[in-house]
Length: 265
Image (cartoon, rainbow, N blue to C red; front, side, top):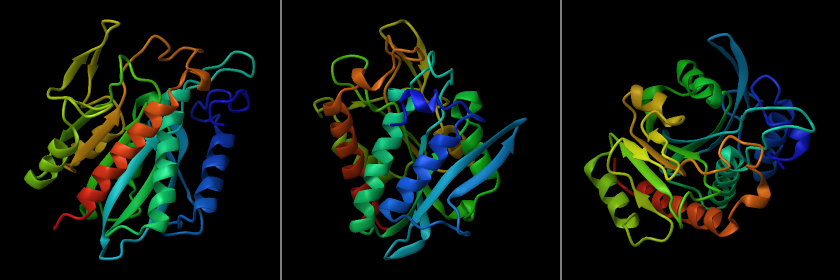
């Protein structure tokens, strides 16, 4: 849906249909608005006006401490007949986030979870910066940011990057447990830079919406793919996504969140 022509590439300031669609899905799933009767958190950041979409599941044991899941819904825009679908980047991450929300509404977590569909990532991580600048919860209550970006099309074979910073020892052990070289569709990124088959170099730390959280000294885990031949082209469409890769990615993210949720403070 998000990558269809009607959504015209979801460029910030021109993505009202995407905002309405995701807010509607939040309501269908049963996420609660936080601090208001509205999921939308409008912002203006560095001259750009956008809106994040925020829903909440209250934790059953630690409701005042939060995991924040982020996935950006904006893309590069275009027109009805010539646009950038952004199926992998990042309708795929939003789809996985919605699936996780659907799961945790039924299977209540110990920690509270905020689900934040961010706007303006492509312009410079604007939505995530704006979220932290005017957070609906105290920033010190955010225990972890889990960011999902490009979970639909592996660059080579079946490779999903898992990158983290500032985790505690037990949290790191969870990553080690679930992300090993032999794990299906997972690749532990040891360093900060990564070179793709196309010769592009990715800076995983600054690559997506987890970076502003890291700058606030909040532990982060990033799940994402790297550049492929359709990245940021009109050919990044739903037909080129791997359903198996999306499902395996979602399952891995779910297992890690479930295990992290069980850890003591």
